[in-house]
Amino acid sequence: MTDAGHITSGSIELRPEVEQRAAAVAEARTWLRTPYHHMGRMKGAGADCATLLIEVYAAAGLIENFDPGYYPQDWMKHRDEERYLGWVEKYCVPTEAPQPGDLVLYKIGRCFSHGAIVIAWPTCIHARWLPKGGTIELVDFSVEEYFKGRERRFYTLWPKG
Image 1: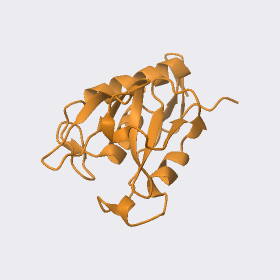
Image 2: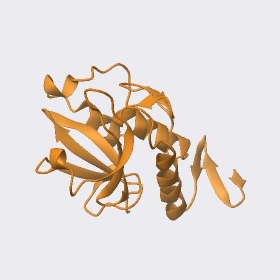
Image 3: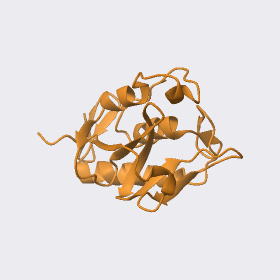
């Protein structure tokens, strides 16, 4: 089905890549200053780094919204299972040169367990957890001490084929 030059496949809208990337970045920006809340999924009320990604890409029409199921807030400290990475790899492929709308994943604890949306690398939007509260914020990962030296990987929803 087409609408104003766009093709739809189920509920996922197929638009030019540049429009899709812009939609992801624009949607991510609308989540800024949302409080950090483990497993939250509501803009302005709360989200974590996993649910932020799901909600942004679903709202931008790039993935089907899905329920990741229950996950403890500190699961990455006690398990080797790449749960977070598994969710990402259902929709994304690795990339070496992140573009707006792509993801960066960081290894925290024993596995990859923190993700952010690239605005213009190294500037990203992510959900920051802090002991006394946190928020979804715009950060420059090149100056974030907590992330310096941590293993990271980049992923994209737009594989080059």
